Length: 341
Ligand SMILES: [Zn+2]
Ligand SMILES: [Zn+2]
Image (cartoon, rainbow, N blue to C red):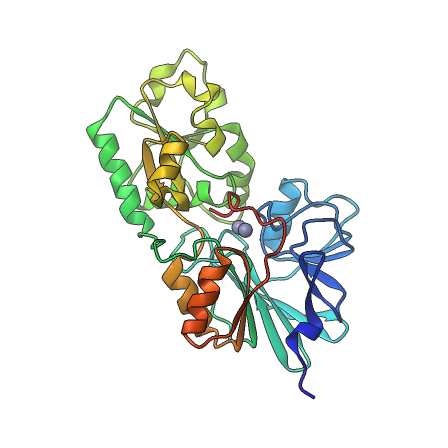
């Protein structure tokens, strides 16, 4: 009898679990053996006994203290095949999401299941592009799986920001960005668009930006806000200050003259979200696939079955079935919407 993919890749305690290899994928709770697709907190957690991940992801996990002395970490480069035990082979393919992000490819008895983690198809100068891996089962997220989500090119959003700065030369742009991935992608895209002034960074963005630099990324000159006296308000006029989203409108940002609260996020396409977060300047900047790219990707993998983990599960499930692709929602736990951005 033919092997059923669910016989060897199961949902256990709300997480994906590769049965013959006794290994979880992106588990939210500490386990003995974990394959980690990338460093975001809704995928990488601390306390695992053994971890398999790309070298970049292992370094990110160390930087964020997700890997301790007790954790045995195995670094696998993209396409490096590894015997995971129990007859299962593991390898990673790039996911185009953030530095080191990977799709975890599991092979067992002639079948191939790809756990894509988070991924995007839009170009990103700070990470390897997404790679289509033909497979029997494709496991995808559905964070932005509604037809309303059509992400514009980031270059166009960056041009808008630069035009605003030219129009309001006395203002200070306070740009909220997640510390891992978003911050570096926005800085790099601004540089490629010709922005050549120093960036000013909140302390929470420092270590991961340095880590990206260790992997060869060049962000030009950036400075820490904390290196300058609080009274030095005028220094930041007509400059971009980057900070975590929570700091855009809190006490920390009161030190800047004529601040314009801004945010770079996929959710900025929804005006109500921008208002709710008191953002005056929303840059639509998503590190996830939009509606068309989700459907296109599922088709391109030629998977006979798609499993959908989190987000707008029903919408994607319905759309794929319309395309003749069997799909099934699985609703994993711990995947928070806000972390996917
Ligand atoms: Zn992510
Ligand atoms: Zn995620």
